[in-house]
Amino acid sequence: MNPVLKSFDLTGRTALVTGSSGGIGLALARGLAGAGARIVLNARGSDKLEQAAAKLRQEGATVFTAVFDVTSGDAVGAAVERIEAEIGAIDILVNNAGMQRRAPLDQFEEAQWHELMKTNVDSVFLVGQAVARRMIPRQRGKIINICSVQSELGRPGIAPYTASKGAVKMLTKGMAIDWGQHGIQVNGLGPGYFKTELTDALVKNAEFTSWLVGRTPSRRWGDVEDLVGAAVFLASDASNFVNGHILYVDGGVTATL
Image 1 (tube, rainbow, N blue to C red):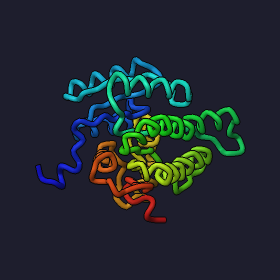
Image 2: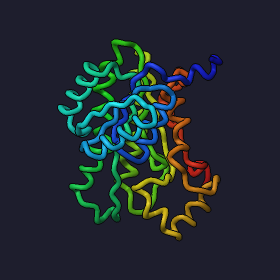
Image 3: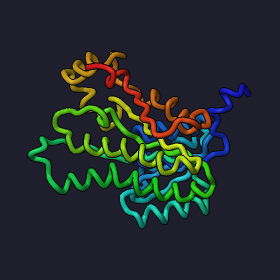
């Protein structure tokens, strides 16, 4: 195989993707599997997760499932221990689990603030730390934290989400600083506006879609497949000297006013 192409090959590596029963998480899992990785899908519930796993297996992927709550330190610790013992060392972690809540900031409920922060920020810390503790003795590993264009830009009605994704961006940099010396690369992947189940209402909103397409240099919504190449790059040896970087896959949204 051409040495350049070989550097993107994930054959023999195991990737844990949190929040991967659908949407972006499942698309990233499918992409990593296509590059040769064994995949561990994660969600809080088993039904949709097993359906996603079955779908990937039909496509030829080697897939396992791990049902656990990414916001619980005890659950995360037990799950990572079980994965490493029963499936194998986690070579690649994609911290994808996340949620959105929309409301004017003066009307945003405190309980929803805490729920959003636990899901979007605490999970990155908890799963990242648990996996890194295993990667450090091995002196290698790849961690990809899913950021957002809202790590850089705000929109009305989503200030808490913006705050959470800004925190993920800076946590990514902190992880890279502390763990880079151990052969671990920690980077962020920042999606723009993508067509998923969660954005379906926005996609169907003609006014919003018109605004977004006009605001985006590439003049379209993103398809989840657009994220795959960037994820494989950050998960592979091709990015061995890339650390603490946020790679925005947004059609150019963050480049323009």
